[in-house]
Image 1 (cartoon, one colour):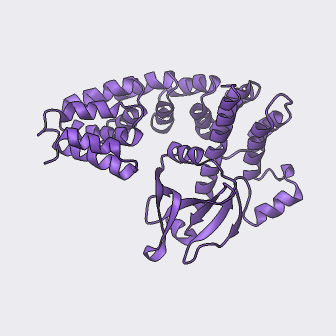
Image 2 (cartoon, rainbow, N blue to C red):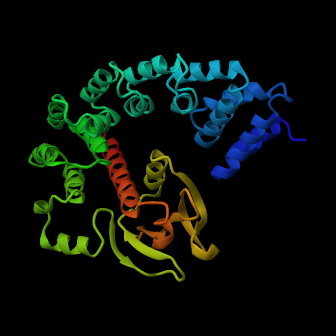
Image 3 (cartoon, rainbow, N blue to C red):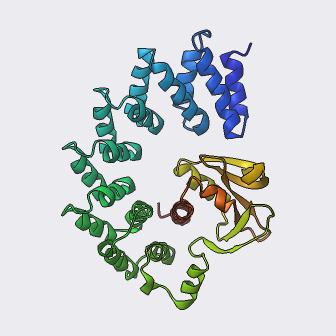
Length: 353
């Protein structure tokens, strides 16, 4: 019979997400029969460099906490330390617990993204929520900026906070870009973005990301005729014209993505499970082997395959993915996250972080 020590070694030895998580799941099933199980789950749950296994360990602790009060106390303590996985578990399973909201407020005040998002989504009417969100937005926290524009767009302080961030340095500008990338841009915020485009002191790559953001929100005066014709063909941003390369139900989108690690990080930032050197699922049980797979809810995936020039093509069963997902919204969100992470990496490499 496998014990916790054997299962832990197995989990750390695997590269694939599924294989990392399965041994941890087994530890969760045998923790009562193995004297080391409880401490092993606790240790894995706070492991900084073991994201997939730590996530599953928190899931197991969440399940155990429903029958074992010590597990809930441990999750609460881990959440107080700022562990996003534990914060999410508390919000998901123990939202009504009297200790949950104070923990979330404490962590949101420290700028923890998971806590800021939880306040905006689940405690919007709490009188302390908006002041916390505004304070963190003033500090340039992207999740707080996103929450303000999404939920408190008509608050009289929202636009001044956005404008204030637009007048700051590159680091704050990038956080602003991150906060605005996944939401609808109206004319007032569009006008603020145009003030960023007019600045002479910002890197051209950063301004290009904001220009792409406006273009995705139909600020057509920023496009030239060539860009318009490209968008009408279905391209733009980091994804350009559609072409067919792979048989069956799969189609291929040529992209401008070139950095595999940034792509993987961007997918993970969006909460998408990632596999390497795996198959993309398509209609009629069809499979295509690719370099990177984004595992989607349902029976279909997205995949990226590297070309000889270093760029990646997106492999997708268009009709299949559309059964459960808005393709445009999904691809745009990946596009936006990749653009932000790419810019962050470039600035870090220039020593501006």
